Image (cartoon, rainbow, N blue to C red; front, side, top):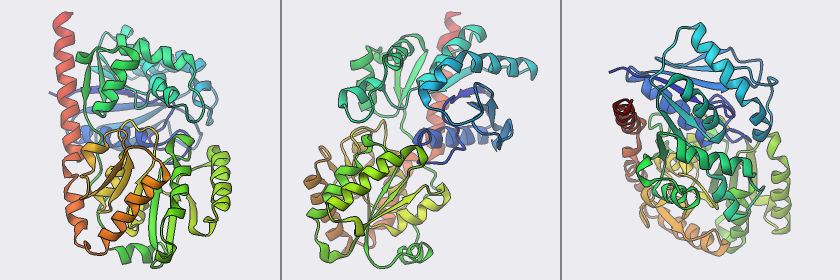
Length: 406
């Protein structure tokens, strides 16, 4: 049976520049899931806030899937919290668009707490089930205490969502535990479905070809990909560098960061100078997603030194390109990384622990050049086709339960 799905992503446009202030793994998740659901014959409309005039109101994401920009406040990038006063306007515009175009939706799938607010509001009007995915949790961020504190407004909104929605999709068992612990969410309400990876895009390229394409030489390359914010632990990765042997001709490439991240970028550059490794570190800035496989393939390894990840999509992308990963024990890393085979998991991001596992992987890579294909095979179960099938099954379960009670 074909489903008509309204996805809501108010603050983050799936077409935004990855690695920027508001655009990360969540945007990839929404775009890829919508595309795959559309391929399966379902109709998917993703609603987001109009944030720059260059976009048409309606943008095709693929067969049966489209992105719809709605006016809510000024058409410009603004801080996430500054969007909150415009959520009622966004919900009003969404309902107007639906009515004007004669649309009907079977369910609502919201992403992040701001979108969850809209989903709760619209659900009462449409009388269809509301499924949410929070992607990160404010209470967890505050418990870690790294970076800017999350406001009570967010914490309370997430608590209300955890009680009022009809299903929460969590990307990892760890995130499910956080939802239960911090928000007293009912375990029966939470379904764990991992994130996926585009195996057509993220594939293993010949290392020398990838390096030639990027004009990189024969240095040992350590890669970081993600938003440049304190929670990502990039400073700990920089502090790991002096523990490594200089004779290996190391190069660290840090991908991510836009104008909203400049303060953190400058802090990290200053730290690099203090550590006397600034000649070894390249701040690459934003990189288009289609170019990322070249960087993953060119790298000897990728590091995820985060304090917190709801899943850890970068690790999945790196492994799909045949490149091993060193990651902290966050998100779903234990299910993604095969310890000692496709990478290592460290208990925390202490620099000496990160350095130790980097050194182990570098010593392995000299004798295991054939490992790339086996590393890629280790994550093929995370194809978006498999993830979309699991999500659709969840949609149908929720729909059956919802309408059996009506």
